[in-house]
Amino acid sequence: MSQHRDHADTMSEHDRHAPGTDGAETRAAASARPRHELIAWRNAIFAIFFLSGFGLASWVARIPALRDAVGLSTQGVGLVILMGSIASIVGLVAAPWLMARFGARLGMIGVLATAALGLVAVGLGGSALPSVALVVLGLALFGFGNGAVDVMMNVEGAEAERELGKTVMPLMHAFFSFGTVAGAGLAAAASALGLTTAIHLGVIAAFIAVGVVIAVRFVPLREELGDDTHTDAPREPLGVRIRRSLSVWTDVRLLLIGVVMLGMSFAEGSANDWIALAVVDGHGLDATTGAAVFTVFTIAITAARVLGGPFIDRFGRVLMLQVMAGIGVIGLSLFIFGTEPWMIVVGTLLWGIGCSLAFPVGMSAAADVPDRADAAARVSAVAMIGYCAFLVGPPLIGFLGEQFGILNGMLVLLGLMVMAGIAAPAARERSRRAG
View (cartoon, one colour):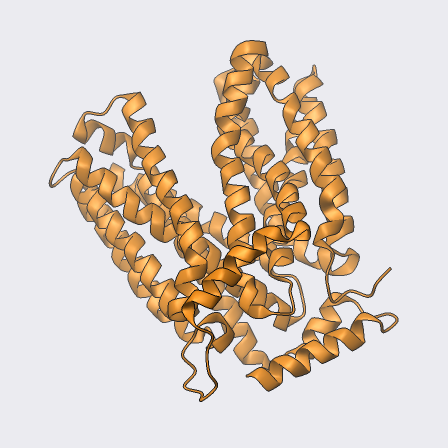
């Protein structure tokens, strides 16, 4: 394993200065795995992304039933969701340590099994054994597991992408979106059929638990990520690996990648929560139009992630992030200042395209380091920055909207998108030829 890694690093150093060599060609040359193993690995991570989104949407879509079963107020629902969000942050922080201790395979099985157990508790607490405490406990388990697997699947996705030699991380994030669509659709069907949350979420939990066990069989074992490869090579002590994971926060390049993710995640999260209301309250259109405009946003961001990989391979991360930031600024400006419905729709479309690639590209850039043992900690760090933006952005926009109007409150997003574009060079491929 170490010989292969040294060989790969040597080739990367040579290719970095070779005329006409781009990052994709270098990554492909660095991989010694058979093509069918790489494809199976990639497909396994597609499945993990799908399962993560599937579980999230499954319980979120049943919130009304859960609220009614335990008698929560709207504020109470918000507090319960907050507990799950806090647990997700804890999972993001813990993920590198869990990978260092158990490896990627066992780590992903463990945390998704934890998330599945959480779904069972949420389902029971929302029907068979109505209890706010049980729902909160379930969301804490689910949030921790889903937050931790977010780091792990992105680390594995970045590794598979590196060895495949082409950008697939945006498509992986699209599979998360596919999972949310499937989860929401099945939840709607379960509600229409009168299935209790205990039955519905229990079935979903079983599907996730079985699915992850099947999928990880195709994830290769790698000693540098903590897997037991049954080699005689000595492993770093756990304490050393933990200290290494904390040291990534001193990397200025990584923090600048975090700025890219902060700005675009802020824009994406705020759109998810406020775009429909901004259409109604800010532009004076009806609620149906508001829902339709939000649908345009979700289609735009998903389609851009499905189609974005080849463009990144062709033009590079930096140019694509800068172009996307420009598209996002134009789109958001049209949305805020537009006076005609078509301007709002076109602005929303460009807004969704503009902020679509920053999160997956930021994950790839964070993991793009010669020492693969640092990848998990780096992905965890930028993931925390991105998810904090998702959590903080909507409340801040709500506060600014209350004070200055919802459209004026969104002006802060323009500044953050500009910052993301300025910080984009930090995401440059390390294997790409200098200059």
